[in-house]
Length: 381
Image 1 (tube, rainbow, N blue to C red):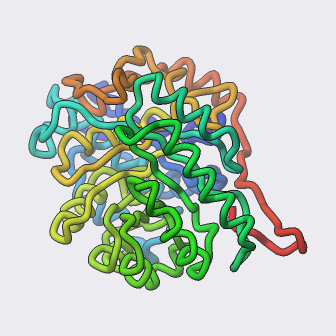
Image 2: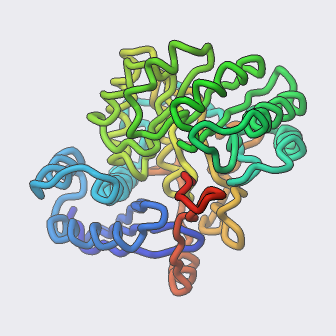
């Protein structure tokens, strides 16, 4: 079997899909994208295609090694995301060729269902208690919220207590039998995180995500030692070498993104590394259906998996949502807040190619928001 074509599709609201076709009629799908830099990743995929066209798609590990290391310059979000989407598509082909879901090729399932959580509140969190109650009523057992909008390096007592009161309201709305994840999104300085974390402890978050920016990861060990709240990070780390700097240094939960951190191949290795340090996995996934399907294949095969993010109905997806591009949405629906293990081959989903091609004619130029503080200086989004 040989790869004969690799086509990319810019699909609203902010996605990039990859279709890899073979000479035996087996097609694989991937989702290589950096949010806000989709065209850049698309160009990287086209460059990597020069090596892959005519190659055997089943040599997944060899291709991963060449694509990540063969260009001399290595790493970074653009290259690792381009490789991630290609890797997803090759695993999809391998599963379809074998007539097996990818998790069977990874050693077989270790669980029959995967716990999911739902987003509430948007970028600048509002009406979180009401939205949390709605998601619990819909069957989810856990919700995730941004803790705050902009935060000054050391913000006022009033802004500090706004975060605490918001979290308290969600805890009251969902009760003690459901879980709450608080995402600080790198908006807090180390000093501000140190102030906030002890105040959030009474509300028992499942974990606090990106308490500090990835460039300040060396501070995570001290933060972890100062709080009982499990700390999570990883959506902006792109390889096992990046995770080496945080696993074993304070985090309780690793959050690689299968569309950013080198794909299924690399995230599986990150999970194995995390397991040796008693660190669980809650993979980042605010993207489209291919990324989510790939994440779920890993979740069924990874022993130290905790919970999975998903973006059905997330605030970015206005007018075009995750399930709109599937022939059958059943594999990405979550009765009782869980994804049920599928035996469908490959990534377990069937992409509606006509719909993808139709939406790609519309395309997108999504960009990350640029926020500023009251004094006009740049603020972390």
